[in-house]
Each structure stands twice: as C-alpha cells, then as structure tokens.
Length: 328
Image (cartoon, rainbow, N blue to C red; front, side, top):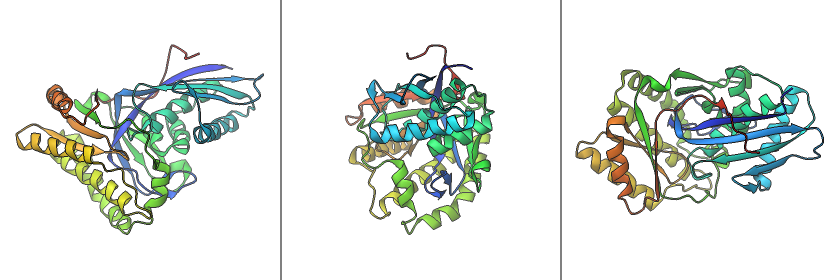
C-alpha cells in the first residue's frame, strides 16, 4: 500500500453559514449550507504511515502542533486507521498559503487535505461522498472543501447522509472573493466552541426557521448569475451569524471596529455603482464578493483602507486533489 501521500485543498467561503449542530460529536449541522471554494486560499498536507514510528508526529505551519491541534489531528488519523484497519503511526506536515485560525476557514481546507492525504497514504481510495463524510468529522465545513466549485452541504440527520455535493463547477460563474485581512491573529474562541454556544442564543430558532427560504434565494441567485440578489442574501446571513455569536452565553465577539470600517467602505462603493457585497466568517476579516470584471478595482480600493493588512483575490476553486510534491 502507499506509505506517503500529499493533498491540496481549497478553503471555502459560505454564502449560507453553518452555525450550530444537531449532533456536535459527529458535526451534523442544523441546516444546509452553500459555499464557494477559494482557489488562492489552500492547505497542502503530506501524510506518511510508518510502521517503525511509536507516535504520531505532526507539524503545522513549520512548528510542532500544540496540544489542541495535535488531539484533533490524531483523532482524525484514528478515524482513517479504523477505516483502513491499520495501526501504524503517522508523520504529518501541513502548511497554508493564508493566515490560519483567523476566520478564513483554515480548518476546512486543513481537514479536507488531511482526509485525502491520509486515506491515500493508508491505501484507501474513498469516493467523494465518503471522503466528504470523513472530512466533516474533523471539521464540519471541511466537507464542503472536498467537492469543487460551488458546493452545498446537505445537513442530513445522521453521519451517513450529512455530506457535501458540487452544485456548479468552478467555471459556472466568474465570481471573485476579495478577502480584506484586517487581522492575522488566531481568534480566541474557535468555531467549535461557537457552534456549541449557538444553542444558548434566543435568536437561533428564528434563524433556523428562516433558512429554508434564504437557501432557495441563494440557489436562485447563483443559477441566475444575479449578483444583487445573491449579495443581499449573503449579507443578511453573515450579519445573522455574528448576531447569534454575540447573543450566545457567554457572548462571542468576532466583530471588530476594523471589520466595520471595511463593511462601511464596501457599502459606500456599492452606492457609487460598484457591484460588491460582503460576507463574513467567524472572525474579523471581510470577504468582498464581486464579479471578475470588478475584482481589480475592489482589491485596489481594499488596499487603500488603512486597517487592511493583506488582500487575497480568489476565483472559484476546484475539488481537493492529490499533490505532486511532498512536504517531506
């Protein structure tokens, strides 16, 4: 069986968010979500199972994994070992080309890449659906980084029917996600804790009840290439995610003054006729959604904002794939 494998996976930006679980242990969400893979926000991971190794050795971003990172990666490797019926310990090395833990869905690309690399290194070739189910158990949104392009995560009711599927290829619509990074600091409260706290918000039930209609709006807008309709829906959903976080017990504040200044700038550009809308993940950085014809202008304007430290322009990205160059 192969002993070493490398995989590359895109992060993704959710147009309809995943926030709150039906089953936290298996990361089965309360609702479907829709996302776009990001071609310039990727994780590369190499995994080798080695019979002579006594323990898993995990390096993330050039440094040994901390205790929390290690526990999460080892738990995922254990899932792969159980599927492959092997006991070998692994050597793992992973690196991003974008800031980690800052609300750009780094765990999504990380666990998608880890799932593909580890299963192949263990001698398994899982179909896309099974790979998505596996990735979901490491990080919920990672299931959306397995298929390519524009993706819907079918929430399901149990592990076997909670997985993601591509609803349109990357070439379907020339959208761009211009990420305005205002902070590269790792957020103090991770998404896992945020999902756990979501049920304490009095607004969560209202959000879940309203999501069916909003999901339909996003699907219609996506298939019609209607940026204005898509933008209105994704802005609503982004604000709602942060509302749920801020009204959880205890409240979680991913919101920041820098984020608000970028949002206000984007709204002003739109009032001047530029087709740009914002969305947010569980972090302070702002995703500016526009069409490719306006991406250079949006990126240039974002760079002029004093709070913005870095800008990453993303086209729709492909599916998780095997890499040709190993990290070790």
